[in-house]
Image (cartoon, rainbow, N blue to C red; front, side):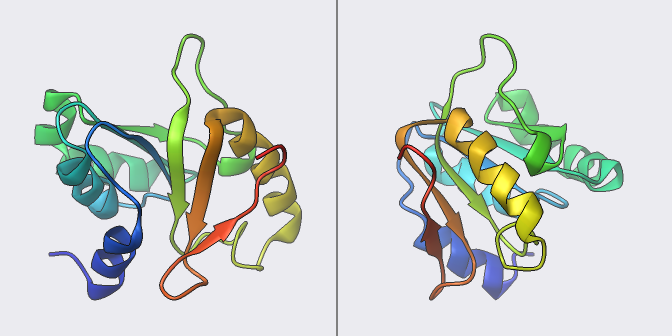
Length: 142
């Protein structure tokens, strides 16, 4: 079951087939699976979360998408996230209820925007849930 909050946020993202999308604070992977359905078999979604328990839950609930190669999950805090060697950058990133972007943890947010600027394609955008329903956070050099 997808909550109204997640459904509205996903609907507000500028998604299209083939995009590479990074979800920050993916929790159990509900939004990542919804995004994967939209970006389709040529797209890809990576969900990250600082909680190993959340990543384990996301992995358990996403077997079909993982097998199809459209979704993956990684245990990582956004402020320490980096692309793996050879990993392609992401077209967009989004975060729902993530303290680094909603004002609860501004120091983490300052580091996170630097990390995300390096992980997104030139012109890539970070969407987060303090707008109606989403806002765009400017990234350094973007």
